[in-house]
Image 1 (cartoon, rainbow, N blue to C red):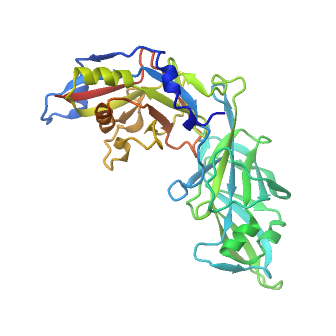
Image 2: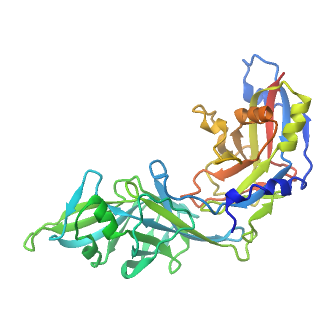
Length: 418
C-alpha cells in the first residue's frame, strides 16, 4: 500500500469532485461561542470543504512515543466496514531503571510471571472474554536506537514458546497474570550489564491468537504492575522466594505490529476513498481523513480581505451508522511538511467542548480552529486538514463521519469582523 505521506497529490485529484459553498449566514453561532461581553460586532460565515478523502494511514510509527504514550494494545477484531485487524506487541525485557547490571547466573528460579495491567476492553468494555494468549521469545533483539512502524515485525524463536493458553478476562479484572514456562528461566539467568541483558534476552512477542474470543485488550504500560516478575532463591534449601521485577513496556523499547485484512469490507482496503458521502476514521494504522477548504478560503478572502477571525469551529457530524462506542477525541494536522498539529491544538489553552471531543447534543465532533483559519487566510491557500484519531496507537474505537456532499456535511463555522 502507499504510505500516507505519499498521498499528497490526492488533493488535486479530488478538487473537481464537489463544488464549494460559502455564504454569509444569519445564525446564532456568534452568541453561542463568544459570550455576552464580546467587544466586537461579529459576523457569521460558513466554510464548506471542496474535496475530501479517506486515506490509508499505514505508516504509523509505534515506537519513539514511549515517554508519553504509555498504553498499548493486542488482540483481534473485525466488522463489515473496516474488515479484520490484529495487533501484537514486541518488547524488550530490561533491568529496573536503578540497576546497572545483574548477577542471576547462580539463582534458582521458581517461576516467571508476565503481568499486564488492563486499561480497556473492546468492543464490549463490560464484557467477558476468553483470550488465548501466546508469549514467545524473539530471535532478534528489539533495538533501543531503532524506530519501528506499524508494518514492522521481528522473527520469533520457535523453541521459545513460553505461554499458549486461554485466560478469562472480564470488567472486574485489573491485572492479567500469565505464568510462563520454566524454559524462560534459562534466558533470564544472566550475569550482564543492562545493555548486555537486553541484547542477550532479545525480548518477547505477546499476542492474542484467533483460537479464543475476538476482542482487543488495551494495556497500561506505565502501571508498576505491568512487568515480568521472577521468583527466585539463592539456595535449594531456602524456603521462601524473592521477587525481581524486570521492566516490560515503559522503560524499554517496544512497538506494536498492526495487520489488516479488508476483504469484503466497505472500504475494501483502497488507498483513497472519495469523501463525498462518508469519511472513515480507523485506528491501528487504518484510515485517516483529509479535507480541503481551499476554494472556500479563496472565496472568503476575496469577499473579506481584512477579516479578523475571532472564532472558528470545525464541525464533523457523525454518520448514522457509526458505532456508538466511538473514539474519545479527534486531532487535526496540516497536510504539509511533517504534518504538525494545527496551532490551536498546540495552544496550552483549550476551550472545553472545542478540543476534538464528541458533542452528543449536536451529534458531531467539534474542534476549535481559529488560529488555523486565520493562518490559511494569511497564506492564501489550504494545503488540507488531516484528521486522525488521538489514541489510534492503543484504542480500537473507530468512527464514520458524514461526507462533504451530504445534507449535514463537515464544515467550519466562523465569527469574524473587519
